[in-house]
Image (tube, rainbow, N blue to C red; front, side, top):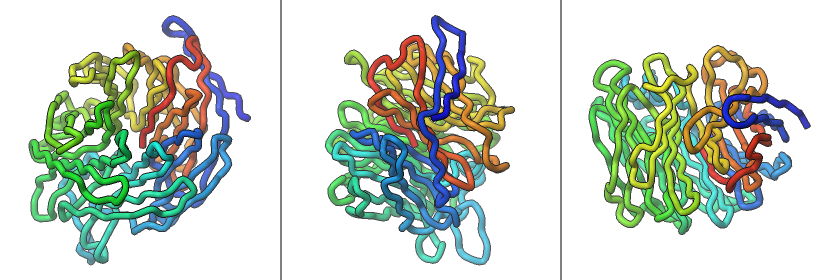
Length: 407
């Protein structure tokens, strides 16, 4: 066991961390999402080594590989065109998503430990992109797989499961003949994959939902960005609540100032439900965190007006009274994760997890999950799939309830 500790003396107490285990999956060229099941097994997803298939890997709580699968459609590249009629996304979409989001892949686990993975893939010889969802049993057998094409160009960037085992899928889409992109949320039957409802959101030139979660009442909480008519300063964060029964839009909030989200998670503590969004803010890209109450009122915001570290955040998970995040820290050549206070947003701990294995700009940690023992799982990297399980040591060691997944 590695024993890496980093103490942050700011605040009331000090925090540290140690690596419980670290696994590299050579069959992956980069992991995107992470989730844990009821037995604290770890599931990660990404793209395979040849970058032409999706990949899913399941580890037990001690890091032993249980199974893996790469039997999926080809990865979609809808930002370039060539001899084939490959869809081309608008420049505003490319500017944000092409740089930050890799392969648009996410994973969730339901109450029966079934695994749902989602991503963006090609169909028809590369003539269009599709949303693709696959459901596995806990032992890796395929239960069903479905494709969804509400648009000509389709992006699937987030997946979540409600309390009844039904699935929320978030993303966006449009056509190659229009610069307009619309956000979309689908509710899908967990049993069959049939669409129960879909809700399309148009606001500005571009609207894309990048992440989704389910609240305690079975509604969908989707985070995304909107704008894109001009410069990079045009993008605003948008958080929307869709009713779980019919998909009607109930509440929505926007935060201006060139802010784009990558992950939304929900949390219930002492009967109070809150929503946390992470991403990036500002022209120079700085870490961004936002906490909302159940009704989407702002409780606190870090980034923009509040100075934060340079770089961006990608994944998030709730660890008791803290937020575990992943992403990129400007000026560092190491994989990065951090711990923030759930009550204030203040950063409690930086975690440096070893030198990055490649020189690619997208070589960083992405998915975050928290298990029942409040251990933090982060996954990502480039040219291989790296998964790390961390134990947090701190003034409130293991405080609160564990849980929360992020892709």
